Length: 463
Image (cartoon, rainbow, N blue to C red; front, side):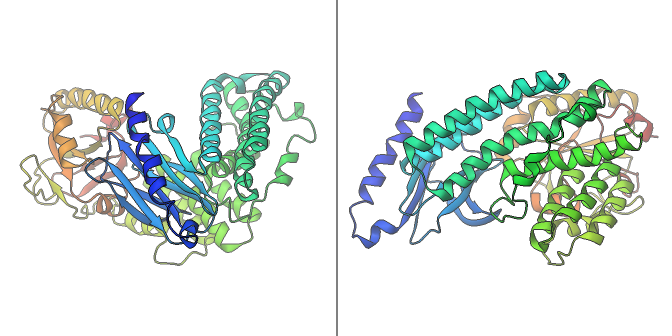
């Protein structure tokens, strides 16, 4: 990988330059690197989902920042839409090389603190590989399931212990390293009962040992350090799914029901978490996941009503409550709120005034090529069946990427628009997933604000 090596040559030079200062200067921290094939002109440096700094890329796609004092702990760097974690101990100064073509696999850390961070990336990639290979493991009988996940865990555990002995990292870092190791294993245990039942129709609970869920007592659910840590959030999702769905099984209801199960998850979280700040964060995570999944406006209202009853987050920054308010503006018969839209000539498009027939609005991005191709194939079919319906494609990329992608495809069956204000799209139209579709009446009022043109029954919604 010559390019990666070349980018890495920046690292020792910068670290050498900044290690020649005074003794006091050595307590400062540095973070920088280089992004190959950048998607945006910046990298976000964050902690606990809050942006600390926006690091602009220079002409060589490099970024760099000096912190006069950086509290030791877990941080993350984000280059939309991807992110990864980075841990800083006192005196650490780190550089990273990134290639967006294969974000996670490309990441290499260099500098003071490199070994522990490269370990964490290696463990993450190993676990991701395990996860992708473990699809069928949830079909196994319990004895074979346990044997398989225990074998995989043993390999990762040995890697963790050996690395800890060699690197001699801090207790602060070890908390996250050990948590990633264990939570990944526990997540598989939470997945097993309900995924097995859904796939095979077999309720496996009676075959599980009495101490099967003993790990739950070892997890510090209300530890602030875990609240935004993705391995914990994945585990928590698995546990809440397991508890909610198995409750339904007990009642003899084995049918999948997203609304029922997610309201159950809200109720379970309310019973587990006592600290208001952490409880609200967990409720928010459940709500975000649900709203990404369910595009039924009636279900959304029912779910949000229960969320409002349980959440004590009354801050103006509460995204879920903002979504709830926005959903009220997307009822049948309402006008779509105005957002910035332009055509290929950069001419503004008014969604209320510039249509005069039934209109289907759908979305696409060059980051999801499979969806792009599927949706346009579907539009081609629908246009033949409903020639009087107008189709509007709204792209969510930047202008250059939009036009570059359009040059490679034949998009003749749909009017091409691009949003100039993604935040307005996200907030005013409650845009939470790329396969969202909106149907407007000929007078510009909403006919259906939450649907999906790839749904097999979509044609029933058109006149």
